[in-house]
Image (cartoon, rainbow, N blue to C red; front, side, top):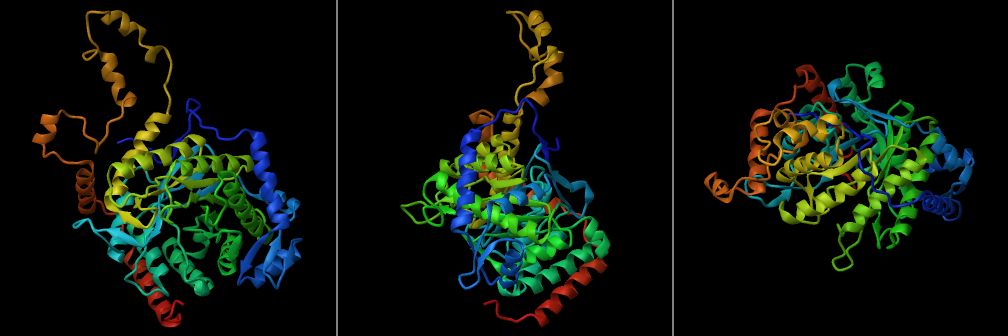
Length: 495
């Protein structure tokens, strides 16, 4: 099986361009105007507000609003490194975001799972989390182990610790952590660091190869949760890579026009980036433009072609700044795996892929990221492989032009028995594992299985056969003790 994790974008790769440079300049200028005149609100963030004031921002402490001068924003962009390393507990899965490679990752923190036996939705459990992560670990398309769902059967005040510990034990690939609820964010970050240190072996080793990273998501429009910003700054000062994400809904938490939505999103991203760089200059920061639009008929996430278009545009904007960028893909409002999910996911993934995203995010979920699906995780893997085959382009040289064999076969022969065919068919052609290409009679004779049924069977095979290298028993025991201590020490209520 060919390893495609970290697909390198060749010169032959076609590209999709939404904007010319002049139009990106207009988005940039509009974003700076928003930050200078309207600003960003930072809730529960007095420490952050003071830091920003001391570094030249205009701060209204009563309203908790910060105005960012353009020169501060542009200097923050210049200070941000152009590459980011992601580390797994097995070094062979480490990867670098460098603008020359494309990676795929799963969605995060869905609250439901499609039951593998019944097909019905239900609240996710730790067992679901472990199995979904193990399937992700096995599928070659996904660069990171993910955090596809959450352990809703664990206490709310320590659930994120269970999530991270379960992810570390279920994948050897990179896997991040989250901290919630916000009022416990700083304390929970300390526990997450203890867990990461136990797996790394020492604080020194963790600093050398950070297992996870800091980051926060804005609360569109133009708002931060200050306690999450504080945890991000804390991790930045320890040398962890960080991220700033924005998840607006056009027509609800951002303007309904795609250009206006890009301005609000970009202003949020730039203000978050500036905050991190002012607190800890030179921190590696990835930017996540996770954009969508409100369906005006239902009041839910829309999942239309405009999402693919605006995410492709976001890639171009991030490239304008030279930043490592993650955008949405695999978007679908479907409630079940099938035709709707597959065609929506293919469209929403192809455009940002062609635009040159570092990471296309969102595999394995349904209904706008609400629900995790084992079958969808497997189907999305096949979509990744098919799309990567399409965007590789066509290699032209004497061997691939095949003039010698064309002259030999002429008009009376065929190419099936030619050595040239045998030498090249595996690299030239895509071979799906789930999609069926046999005749109708052969398909019926083999059981007449649908794509979804075959994905379900593959999932079961993976769960029976694939087991990542386990954590050392002493490390497992230490992690269990850390979580037990957190459950004793932290307030029981997550409110």
